[in-house]
Structures are given as C-alpha cells and as structure tokens.
Image (cartoon, rainbow, N blue to C red):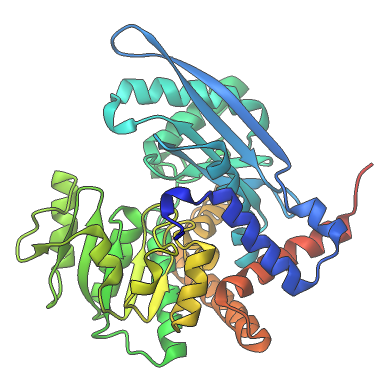
Length: 419
C-alpha cells in the first residue's frame, strides 16, 4: 500500500533519518543511546479564560532534545494538529540543524494544540502567557531559547519575553529570539529563513550548472519563508510560475508578479484569485515541470504516493520535514537534487543566534552585517554537506545529517557522562 502524508509520523521520520546517518558514520551504540532521544519532554495543560467567559484547556509541549553543544533552541508553534511526536521530531531536527551550520545551540521545540485562526488577540495573549508560565522553569537565555514558528510571530515572542522578565524581576531580552526590534530583536530576522533558502539554492544551482536567471520555480506555502524565498528568486531573475497557500494555488507559466502577489497576500491573507493567474490544485503544483520546487508549508508534503510525479530538478526544503523517507528514495532514484531542511532552512536559527549574541552583548548590528554573516554561514555549510555527499556518495540528506550528528557525537564523547 502506498504511504500517504497522513500516515507518516514525523518522529518516526526523524529517527529513520538519524539511523541512516548514524549507520553511515558507524556510530557506536553507546553514542547513539546518548544523542538519539530528547533530554527533556514537558507536557502541560494550559487553561485559558476565553472571551465568552468560559475556560478552555489547551494541551501544550516543550521538548529539549539536546544541550550538549549549548542552550536548547527552537520555535513555538500554534496549530490544531500539534502533537507530542511532531514536537519531538522538530526538536530533533533542530539539534542537527544547529550543528550543520556550526552554531553553539542544541535543539528544542514547543507547540500548543489550538486553532489560532479562530482566537482573538486577547485569547492568544492569555494563552501565550499561561503557556510561558508553565514552561518557565526550563527556559532561559542560557538554557532554552524559544522563537516564532507556525502561526506565532514577533508579538508572541514579546509576550513570552515579558512574562519571563516580569517573573524574574528585570528585562531579559535574550530569553527569546524573533522579537520586535524595540525589545532587542535583530535586523534581518524576519526574512532570515527565506534568505537562507535562497543562498542554498544559489549554491545548488552553481553546483549543478543551472543558471538561476530564468529558472522556473514553484513555491508551496507562502508564509514568511516561502514569500521571502520567492521574492529573492524573483529579484535574481528566476521565474516564479506557481505559488500556493492554505487558501489555494495560483499559476502562470510566464511568471507571477511576486511583489504584487506579496502585497495582495499582506492585504487579504490569501493568494487565491490573484490577477493574471489561473487556479490549480495543490497536488498539481508539486508535479509542475520546473527547475526548482520549494516546499515551504508543513511536514510530509512529498511522500511515496506523490514523489514520483515531481517535475523539478531541485527540491529546496524551506519547511521542516516536507519530504518523507519513502519520497527521498524516489527523488534520489529520479535524479532530483534535494537540499535537506536542516541545511536549507537553517537561516532562521542562524540569525536567531545572531540576535541572541547581540542581546547578550547589548550591541546591535546593521542589516547588511546580518546578511553578510548569514551568507557566509549558509554557503560554508552547503560546501561542507556537498563534500560529504560527493566523497561518501550518500544522499544530501544523509550527508547533512552526518555532518550535524557527527558534530554532536564528537561533543558528547568529549564531554562524557556526569556523574
């Protein structure tokens, strides 16, 4: 029976990817036991008084996968389909992601099972503050540093930072990243993930001898990562021919006007009905003949049932876990070059690290400084992953995992066990 996205368990995927890389690295069972599983898993109930006066209890999680190389780092997402296994998977990927780009963080992730689209601003604030209070004992600038993720933003982080700071008795901006600039946020943070995706696509095109100018691109998911990636590719001369969000999918073989599309999305909240485009089904976007496909939505977008139809030369994983192991095998067989998520979308956590450094030093950088540093980090990481891919003749995902897992394994081996 074909595997579908709905049947894939994100944590099973994360463990399968770990095992493949650990086997390629020939890691001992002792090291695997120390780094394969989360260090700490916290599940909390979050009671919130809703606008109608009644109390609703939300279930929420915070998972710290690793603190071997530094404080745990990872976003908080608000989504109806948040599960503990999903959060564990995302925390695991964050550990390897931080190690791939060689920043001194481990992986963490948080999530609240809720539907933010049907909650007022007041309800979201009360839920955020209550959730922060529940996880407060295990977060902090030297312990675990949250950030925005799906359906959370700078305002969410401001509430987290304020709640934490009020409890401690003084302002602690370094407890979160992705904050507003007036609270210690970093220039360039809003577009960091998309810009990192763009830099890795540039590197992949250079490696494959594929001119970026004129390249045809399809983008699944038009949030921060997808829209910024699309804009930068458009500015570089690529032709964005298809874009989707949760409301629909628009297509124009001659290329979409990306700045106008972003403007419409900002005003209306959707891309459906964009002028000079035709609607297509979401599944059609993934199968469009193009040079670059950017899955920038949620996990398991490409799976064993649809990966064979992918018509792109490059799949750039702007989302976390958009390609299942079954899809990986099919894409590899079909010669599709995959830029794995823990490399491709690491721009967000890299600039989060820059923000944390600025907060700790109380010294802030210009936007171009952020972009220049990010480009160096992303392109260095791409070269290191590509070298393993070519030298060891393993898929890019395995190569990226080998780089990240190898660094964590080295750190845990040197640190040892206490007591």
